[in-house]
Length: 100
Image 1 (cartoon, rainbow, N blue to C red):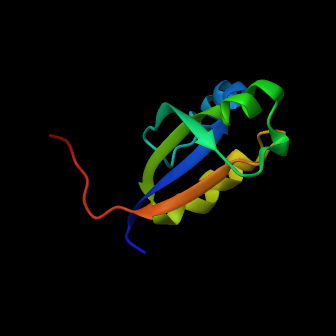
Image 2 (image 1 turned 90 degrees about the vertical axis):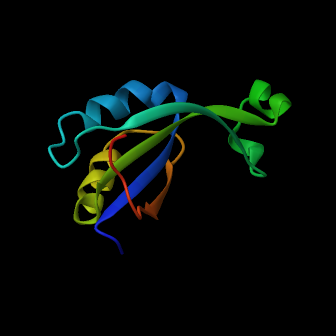
């Protein structure tokens, strides 16, 4: 795995502030970004009626660029957040990054 990776986590709307409060104290990351997204799933039993009608639900997409060695610490910190539905995540290798 490359030295730098991107952790993407999909967060319920009502857990956004909890996630921010969880991540800000972590010294292993210098920052993160959050953007709005709409999630679709075949498993709609967990959706409320309005979400079932819409076919999905509004989520927050969290991206954290970090050292691969710090991945477990970040995921462990996020596990402490009490969510009704588990947060889905994926880890992607970063070939290159920087500032333009």
